[in-house]
Image: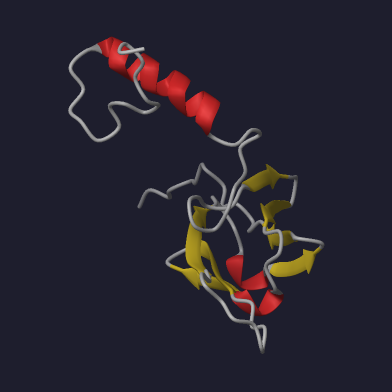
Length: 148
């Protein structure tokens, strides 16, 4: 019994060998929730970017986020997606011993080549934010220079 060591034995200590990382990885695997979940307090939101012939399509997973809590902005040829979330339950007449609230915010910035950000369109549907960004006409790579 004296050889048993509690989970995450070296989490806050300086690691002295490569085996410590391995043991902590095993400890984390068995103590963390499975499957892993994403939330506003620990992570950012997942995005997918597709390039089509004449546009880009960005899909961001934002489950449980209302349209009012999403901000889209154009900054220096980038599109910036910002999300803020506030979870608070107000129940009147309840005698709480312990009560928790969650607040969080996150942002993703995306730069796309030849994007016409001013003509972007966005739609939020069932937790998926879809942003369509048309491409600008490419200037020809080769130009002729007249000689005087």
